[in-house]
Length: 466
Ligand code: FRU
Image (cartoon, rainbow, N blue to C red):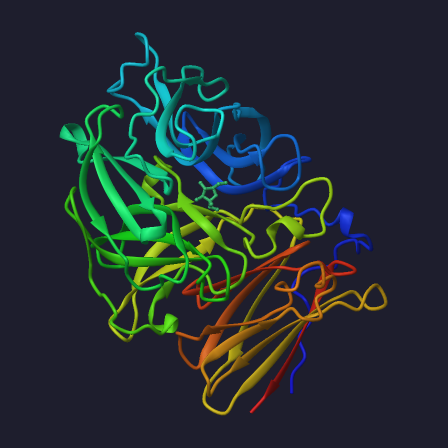
């Protein structure tokens, strides 16, 4: 038996949940948020738009909120970018810098930033209940936005057609590619366009692998395979419910994309969700999408750190919900021959205002390790228990005693992820007030979990058996 102490000094304990605002995970000042939208790097600035209710802290009045950052860890909340109207809710989507002025929105010397979003038309509109894709553009670097007069630009008459992710494909002779979902059909649809205005259907993908809920918020991007010079395409799609840990979750497929069709390397015939590839094994990682135009070809992703099962009920005030940390993605070839995504959190260079525990744990046959996260002695009784089982080759995260759990019947949970590495498991555990992100074996497996402890979780005690 060994006991380790935390790698960092204890932060000031907090006794009241209203003080537990995460430091590094983006939260809106005093409103609700859900999916990250329009992730774009342009002119040295990272733009994070997000599903926002500008008038409250539960879902509704969907609009695009806006925040900017130059370092991916400190965010400035800006005025609402795309407000809802009586006729249109502004659902999820993406943003691009139209550097070739393909849409013709920019005057000379200007670059238009273009948001491609889902118009969810209200009963007051002339398309009640329809979801279609629309554009808005900014000629001042993202501060102010104008809706395109010819909206929507892509309407197939569907009530379940949403979440367009658009990117430039194919270099100087390229064109725009959009992935979106036909949500209830569990299909990702791929469209192309020379100008963001006129769209042609190229192909469809799905249903495939996890289909226990509607498909939402797809993304498609090339990703380097570590140490090979090779690159593959990754298709990410969230689903709700039917995620690996229950409720909302995000799966991915590795394969090829020729500008028209996505072809996965591997399609499992199993219906066992543990045979599929998941971006995260916790309860709280959804709607994850990546930045367009990140410098140095980096693939940087952000997810919504919540779950539709209980998102509207979590005990925070006046804000509700947070984004995940920004994660940098790469592919690695695993011992079983499969290419898997690995994720590394972007952390501040200096001493972060969060707890970061780095440790290695023996996980060979016959071993069992228990790691308990708790508040500083005498400040609270909440705890989160991680168990690494060397025989079952699993890591479980138990948040049943993590503090406030009874605000919703589905919140209290014990969640399990596979150990995919060797006899020694590397763990990085980041505790940021109410969000725990666990990176296992260099991010080969991640678990993201909300917790509402009675005091800040600053201590980690490890017990090893076997
Ligand atoms: C995913 C989602 C999207 C939709 C948005 C609405 O969480 O349901 O499909 O665009 O949220 O807020």
